[in-house]
Length: 406
Image (cartoon, rainbow, N blue to C red):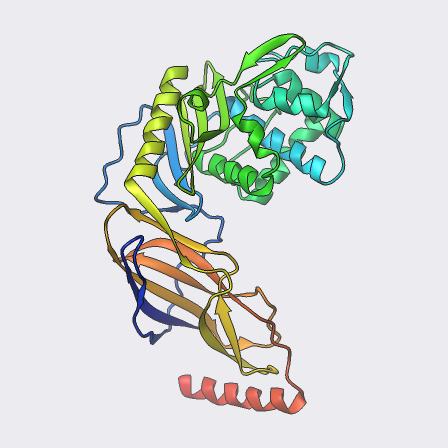
């Protein structure tokens, strides 16, 4: 099938007005690059902004509105997550609550295995019952390994069965370089992830469970008479930081995923393998300030906005409007205008029936020859099949088009 490239230029200064030029349609016979999904992080070609020196084995900072990665080292390098693992443990717990498999007030019994868990603890007592709500707070704020195992056993029957759920969920989310061995983050030979996958998981928690997310901002939690502070030092230093999770083992070093919301923007930073608690906070703060002070994010397409019409063959309507299922944002260096070329690639011919939301192309925002943002373009309405004679006529039209194109 032919790829039709619809090229138009959008010139704007962030915060200013948008000026459109008339589209130019150019037929291209060679296939384009592989289309990324809306959830695939995209690396922004920054060029003019210097990334601060970050003392970490791997790191990433990403704007969650535009889905653009603004700085990265070791994007797909496998690393030890340590207690960042508990993000997945929490994700599956929130999912179980949403699906009615657990309730917040439900009591779970602490097994000997959970009670004997090594590492950080919320100091559960063996054979005693504890509420799911308290376990979640102990998991997130106190990073309790005993809480993680108790939740895993309560949801899946055993930690081993829960780990299978963790790996299945990672696959579903697109965490393609992640493998879990346990629910806690204790070291294992194949217990590995990447900063790219951790960013996918962090965004999923914020997006999918907004009612539960505020727990990550809590600065302390007391259980069994023992008060423990949240180990995320940025919660005490930056009023815009409201999450997410710390991690540490001797082999992994000090890890931190920090999330900040400032001026309506949501940015996450990830540092892996820093030297100390203080270092992971300092390096994370550098990344967040770099992203929030050096860049602006602006909505450039509205959800449901029509950007073009495509010819539909063998359909009850001869055209279908195409646009976006979600609001589309772009992040660019602050205070700098940009002449951004937009390339609309559509696969033709489009044959009925067409479902509303069906992907019919991709829009690429280009900075020169580099892709800044790539978003799927979908049908904004359904088009049913035409009757017999309508299908017959369009079949003949397509047959003649194919002859002349050859």
